Amino acid sequence: MDADTALVIGLALAVLSIPAIVAALSDGRTPRVATVAIMIAGGLMVYAINSKEGGYRIRDLPKVVYGVIGDL
Image (cartoon, rainbow, N blue to C red; front, side, top):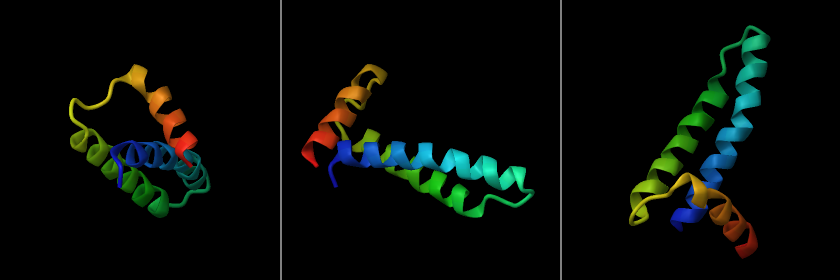
């Protein structure tokens, strides 16, 4: 898997799991699935940062996201 793709999937998974965590906590449940999703997202982002030479900068993220979407 390409580092850019792993980063974008990890970011999307992290953003989508935040409402699941909030919903589970507001209902008084434990956010098990959302926690696993956050861990997978973190793993994908760490993999992407470590596999790309030089890593990523914050200002590069929109370019990376648009590039991955454009490749699809």
